[in-house]
Length: 60
Picture 1 (cartoon, helix red, strand yellow):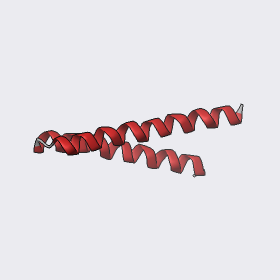
Picture 2 (cartoon, rainbow, N blue to C red; picture 1 turned 30 degrees about the horizontal axis):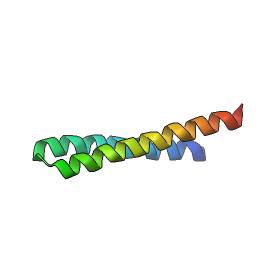
Picture 3 (cartoon, rainbow, N blue to C red; picture 1 turned 90 degrees about the vertical axis):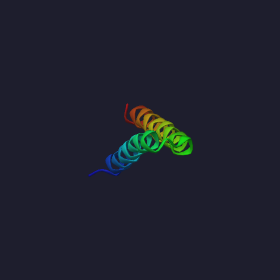
Picture 4 (cartoon, one colour; picture 1 turned 60 degrees about the horizontal axis):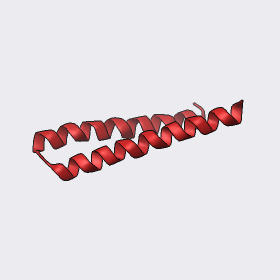
């Protein structure tokens, strides 16, 4: 597996864990868990999209 693929796999796993955290926050009725989970989703997805764009510009 390429180094980039491992990085994107790690980011996608982090995103899925944060999405599961939203489910836990709803079940527990916990606003802090929901806020941390949503923030984690924005950060991991934003980092993933920016890295993908950066890799596309380098390869072309």
